Image (cartoon, rainbow over all chains, first blue to last red; front, side):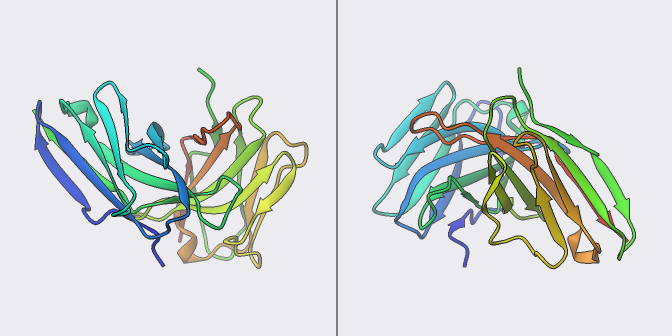
Length: 114
Length: 115
């Protein structure tokens, strides 16, 4: 049972434009969501997070939106840069676990073209 | 900037052999996680330690996998015997409890290939 889903395996955008990465979840008990970026041959790097009590969190070029009623979150990157090309994972915490365990989506590969 | 250290970075082994991975978390981080990432999928938690105690190993194949964190600092993950399906990236992460934040910091991973 895939509790966190990223239905788009890949996304290609032009440099300077907006990148929107989407993530859906099924467990309404999740209380914290995170986005990680991963370059090849490296471990995931924490990017931005949002608590379930908020609907938006912004950090520089990165903004995460949370729609609890739709069980959907999205990551907006504006403006996109070639260095943003990587695999992006969304992750969720909570549910039946209170240990801090994260459930990850399958990832979306973003390519930003110069 | 403090980082999670892992070794080796790459490991090739034959099936039925034993293999071990090492992780040194960020200093002061009490929680340590081992994840497995199969190509095209997200990381999946294998085992979680709080200090030296296991708090979640529900997804660890205990017939062949073992993990320890004897002094509550560094940790070792072992596979014996390795099977072809174990080929994956093994990631270690650590975290500290900081109020409402739950960020986990990942090491570079160990890429395991079983032949």
